[in-house]
View 1 (cartoon, helix red, strand yellow):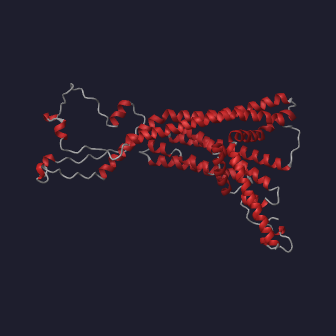
View 2 (cartoon, helix red, strand yellow; view 1 turned 135 degrees about the vertical axis):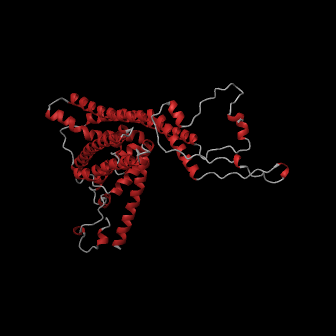
View 3 (cartoon, rainbow, N blue to C red; view 1 turned 90 degrees about the horizontal axis):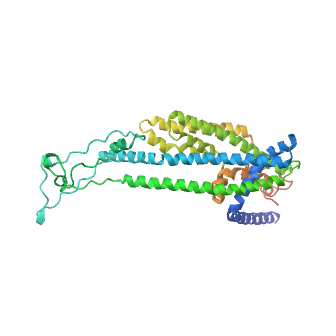
Length: 436
C-alpha cells in the first residue's frame, strides 16, 4: 500500500512537472523579444561584475565612475563581435559572383565528361514521305563524328572576362554583314543542321548557378536581417545591463547556490573564449598556408561557432569543403588537408585541452547538451544555442538543492547510480529510488 502510494505521488508529481515545463516553454517562446535580451544581460553582468568590484573594492572608485567604465567594456566587446560578423558577411558577398562562375564552369566540365562516357542515344531514323518506310542509311560521308574527349577538369577562378569567355566556350559575335553568313565550302549552317536533332544539354547549368546565386543571396539577406535584429536586441541588452549594475551591491554576500552558478558560468565562458580564440587563429593560419581564399572568414566562423557545444566544431570543419572543391580541383590532397587539419585542431583543443582546463566544468552529459541545444535553439534561435549549455548547467545546480528534483539533476549529469547510504532501513533499492 505504501509503495503504491509513493508511485501515485511520483506519477502525479511527474505529470505536473511536465505540464509546468510545457507551459514555461510556451511562455518563454511568447516572451522571446524581452526574455532573450534579459537573459543575455544576466550572463553579461555575471561575467563583468568582477570589473566593477575591482574598481570599487581595490581602486576605491565611486560607483558613478565604475559603472560607466564597466558598461564601456561591455559595449566594446559587443562592437568587436558585430565587427567580426559584418567582416565575414562582407567577404562572402564580395566573392559570391566569382565562385558562382567557377561553379558553372566546373558543372559544365563534369557534364561534358559524363556525356562522353555515357553518350545520349541516337534518335530513330525518320520515316520517308508517303509512309514508304524509313530513310536509307546514311553514307559514310554523312556519318557524324564522335564528340571530342573533354579536357581536364581544372578550374581557373581568377580569369578576366575575355579569358573566362574563352574557357566557357562563349563565341564572339559574327562580323559578317546582316543577312549573310559565311560558311566553309559555301554550305550554309541551315543546310548542315537540316535533318539533325538539336543538341540539348542534359542539365541546365545556368539555371543551377542562378538558383545557387539566389540561395546565397537569401542566406546573406537573412544573415543581415538577423544581425539587425541582434543590434536592436543589443540596445535592450545594454539597458538591462545598466540597470542590473545599478541594482547590485559589490559588498553583498551571496548565497551558495548563486555563487556556484556564477562561478561555473564565469569559468566556462572564460575558458571557452580562450579556446575559441585559439581555434579561430589556428584555423585561419592553417587555411592561409594552404592557400584557401576565404581563410579569414572561416577563422572568424571557427571562433564564433565554437561557442556552440558539440555541433559547432563539426559545422566549422566541413564549411570550407565547397570552396576547397572549387579552388583545388587539380590537387585533391589540398582538399583533404582543408578538412583534416582544422578537424584535428578542433579535436585536440575541444576534446583534450578544454576538458582538462574545465575540470568538472558544467557537469552535463553530452546527450543532455544536445537536447538542450535543440530545446533552446527551437525557442530562441541561434542565441538560444549559444546560451543552451550555461542555462542548462544553472538549472541543474538549482535542481540539486531539492531532494525531490535531485534525481533529475543527476540524470542531467549522466549519473544513473544511487548511493547505498541513501537507502533507509526496511526499504528496497526500488523503493528508495522513488521520491516521497
